[in-house]
Length: 110
Picture 1 (cartoon, one colour):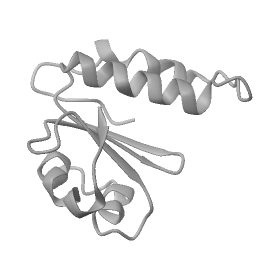
Picture 2 (cartoon, helix red, strand yellow):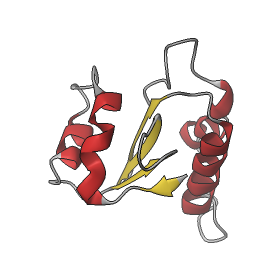
Picture 3 (cartoon, rainbow, N blue to C red):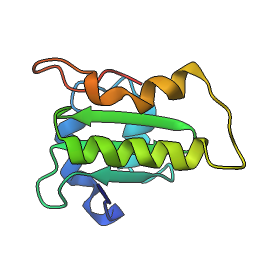
């Protein structure tokens, strides 16, 4: 899992098709909302994790284990580090998302 350069954000637009209701995603792609987009592959992303403040978007192929592990570690480091041991159901579920998703369905809306 690696961060995508903002100049390459258009590469992930196809992964967000059908998620127009997710205004944060549209705003990030328009570079109106500061965010980080992490991808499994810089040239041909098949899975993305968008972090815009406290908003998250997962999209793409849920079966890329190395990407899933990277997201799990990122969420843990951001929200469960030594100074912030808040354990909410929402984040516990995110830490287990590797088994979520369905055939052809991609990641569930988070």
